[in-house]
Length: 149
Image 1: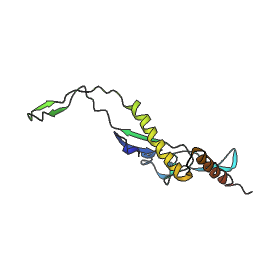
Image 2 (image 1 turned 120 degrees about the horizontal axis):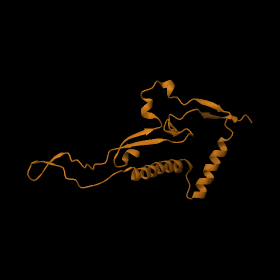
Image 3 (image 1 turned 90 degrees about the vertical axis):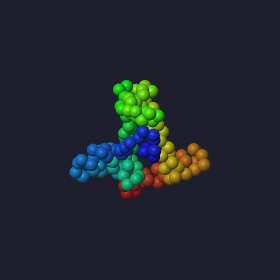
């Protein structure tokens, strides 16, 4: 979904690109007992960016995107006049300075749409109240995990 955004040239989940230059033992998110509640577990890092095997692992979801540089050039590159075939300098038409202010909310919205779609697929419902009820029931049914009672 993130690659479908105009100008996006790369997508990273967690520390994905940096992980490719490290041995496996340095990028594993180690699972430990939660010091506040030994019935619960937590991971000591989040190299996976909250996604493992295509599913959320409960950690914050971290997605980074790389976008291509803006096309505006105050010092134009050589080009060709399509009417004459003559080599000319490209025309300076735009004055974009930075696309980050526009790209961030677009990326956040795209990720939100994907997450909501997955949530609706899992919990379903025809109204927000029904979705909340289904979600609450799911959470309650998993509270006993690790609890011997």
